[in-house]
Image (spheres, rainbow over the protein chains, first blue to last red):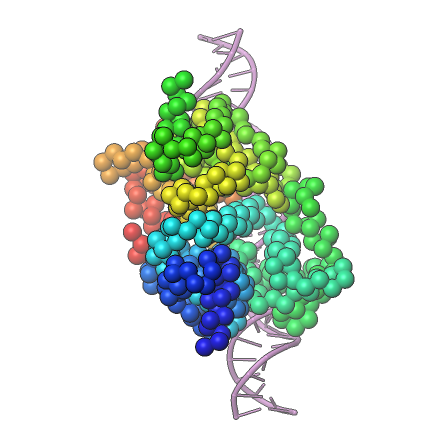
Length: 233
Length: 233
DNA sequence: GCGCTGCATTGATCTCGATCAAGGAAATGA
DNA sequence: TCATTTCCTTGATCGAGATCAATGCAGCGC
């Protein structure tokens, strides 16, 4: 069907697969399992090893499950992102849809085996991974050394960059994740997140409307609050 | 000189470079800059872009500098490790020697350009990066969701795996990093780290001798304290 | 419309780890 | 050997954010 071939189309473009006629490309596309995930539902992998995901449409959260009811959201992903789900080790990992999603799922080891001969794909993957690593390291700094208000500023700026739409000097954000998700991503509680939003609202740095709409009125204020190294653009 | 050629030798082995006669291998080895770092001294990169490091001998810490005097140690590395130093973005990064070190420094972009045609090397790099990413994600869980005592347990178990030597049921650790380093790696203060060591010592879970020697007497106790997912080996 | 349910906000209190402040032990150098 | 410095440990206090507890509000089915 049309949607499905489109799925492979955009994926092929994203990882720089060879032209459509290439046998490698065909083999890889056959490997990919298209999955539809309804909002709120999650992909439990039951120790199937590391997976490579291409997110065709929608937003997901990558969650690490620690002991008890303590989850840490490792990363959010949006339409067009390619990312790894690690095999479960000390924690188990799952992907959860924030809204309805379409994704392509590849067993990472088989994918790599197939791609072994194609430097283009490998190079593309390395790019994806350096990106993921950079983001994860920045997250580690935030979780290890930042206050609640700094973490919120970092979060909002990060979201602005990835899913914000400019509107004059302001940026409009339609957040697909709940307050709980934000809290679990930032190592805080829902209440703290909510209080920080209130503070920013009172300071006119942001406006909110309903549960998901946030307007960032003062980006430079947010940057000043983010605790970034002075003199960084 | 002998040491230097050994340096390249072990590096070539680590990233699966082709046999010694290969011209690519020669070019890559010429690209690598051997650096000696005295204990405590650090490699400031002054925004020279991302770097690839091969640590021939010694231990290093990879530090992210956030605003003011707040540093977060992203990772420790030991003899034989290959790792990326990200280009500075919102934070600046530096590598600091915990003791005397020998390392090989490559500009990441040039290295990748050269390696572009060699699937073996690319594949090796992907392996390194998935490892780094897994560790960084586990660190994010620890920093975001774990108590001080859990973090210490995670740290000790991690070190045991990487640089511990088994001694019967116990593991002997000769930690190359200071309490301050441990604190900066775990998002805690020196005092808290010290207190947690004292608690573990009082519980006979560990013994210490001098500043750097730690003996882990009860690994299963540490594992139980680490807050790992139940039922994980 | 109305009531139900789940999410978000706000307030009161508590707690873990940070901060402040001394001591004590180990490495370093004369 | 002793002095100096640096690092580590221990104690007392403080505070940011967690926890506990309502209350408010948005979305949804009826």
